[in-house]
Image (tube, rainbow, N blue to C red; front, side, top):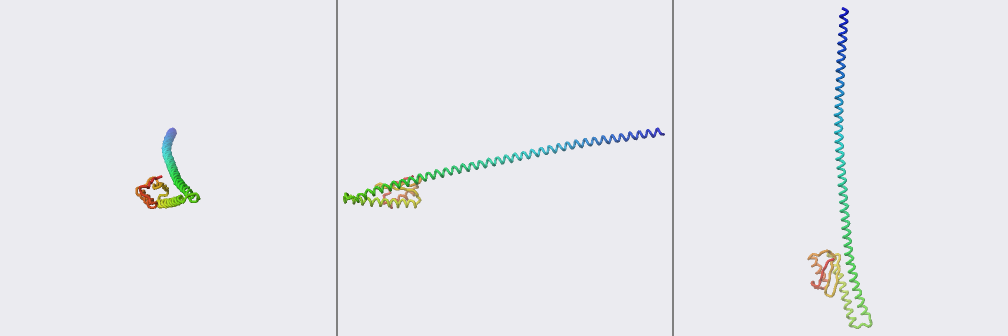
Length: 216
């Protein structure tokens, strides 16, 4: 009877040990699987993070590229504006220089013409004031003085009338019956030529065929 109880105790202990071993084995396996699953999840998160990092880097690169392109485009536009501004400035300077040169020509021409008339008037006045001059010489000098003054007045009237018609620069030279008119423009239209001829012909009592018009 005692032997039977002893054997039952031994069997009971062995059963308990087997149960404990089985439990430990199950617990260990579950822990290993949990660790493996956790590791795989961490790898997935890592890959996800890497993918996000690449996407951000790609966006940043695209943004940087766009910014660079915008900067280059703006620089190109600024360069174009500067170039255009420089060209416009150069064109304006050239135009101003051309206008100054043209203005100088007309101012100088009128000055030389008026100086010539002044010298002629002075010469004839000397004849009038000379005691050695004959009466016929004095009469001729008087007629020439009148003629010169009339010519000067007619020229002044014509140049002023031409200015009112839009021809800012003009100069008129009279040589006997021939009259030369120089207008400060690049070209003249047919109606403008006719307008100039009418003014000169009316104010200076000249025939149309004796009026010669040119541009400067």
